[in-house]
Image 1: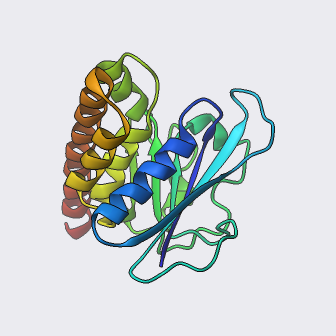
Image 2: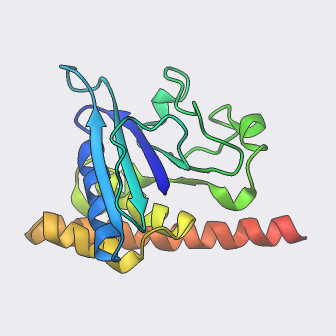
Length: 196
């Protein structure tokens, strides 16, 4: 089973991101489960979404304590909430930011991960470009597909097209594709640097 924890803020689409990921996995013929954890928080409060992907039925329903991947939709949470709790050194880390890991104060921390398992993408900027709204979830799922290989790009785009309509679907699909391409380029560069 592959377990994903998504950290963001209320109003950023964390729940939708988890649901889209589960639909993409289901489209790929796998079992999937998505659910959020939050109370009666206001817009902007920290929210956590969970998604499990497996090749057999998923029987567990509790929050994910030891994720295989952590997706951070809002980098301002990095120093406010323990977003890395339970993430092992063989895990994947995806952060929505246009800053470098050093600028975020994470350079030392991420050295414990394999270089091909840590990625930053400017998903909010991509969403603004394609949607005109700061909703980074779809773009992050494009990058997630490239980073982890747990879902196919086509399945993410299909999930987006099933969920949204018209210009919103078109904009989100474009953001997914751009983030996927950017992630692939960054991973190829990291691989080259790591082998040199």
